[in-house]
Image (cartoon, rainbow, N blue to C red):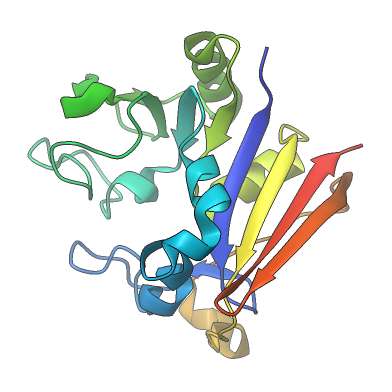
Length: 204
C-alpha cells in the first residue's frame, strides 16, 4: 500500500494562491509565473521533483484547484487543463455540491466527493492500489490533511519571491500551515536551485 503525499509550491511567505480567484486567474491576485517558473521554464534543472508531482496512482484536490466557482456547478466547466489533464489517473475533488464523474482524455476521471477529506482519501487509496495517493492542493487542503494527521510526506517547493499578502491578511489568499499545529513531520531532505528550494518532510 502506498502513502499519502503532497506537493505544493509557495512563495517565501507561504502563499500558494492569492485572493480574488476567477476563471482567467486560477491563482487569484498572486502572480503565479515566478511561483511555478521552476517547473515550466527550468524543468530540466528540477526534473526529479517535476516527475514526482504526477507519479501517484490517484489524486485528491480541493474544489478551487478544479474551478473558481463556490456554489452549484457550472456543468460546462471541465477544469483548467483542457481536455487532457496531466494527472492520467483518478482525481477526487472535494466539494459541497454533487456532480457526476467527469471522464477526460488520457485516463483522468474527476470524481466529486461531498463527504469530506477522509472519504476522498479512502476512495483515492482504493483506486491507487499499491501506489501513492497525492494531495494536489491547494494549501487549505494540504493544511486540512496536516491538521488531521493524514499526510505522510510533504514536498514543499519554495520560490524565492515574497507575495506581500501576509502584510494584509484581510484580503485573503491561501497560505501553507495556516491553522496547523505541530504536525509530526520531520525534515529529511533539501535541494536548492536558483529558482526554488525543495524541502521534503516525512512522518517519523
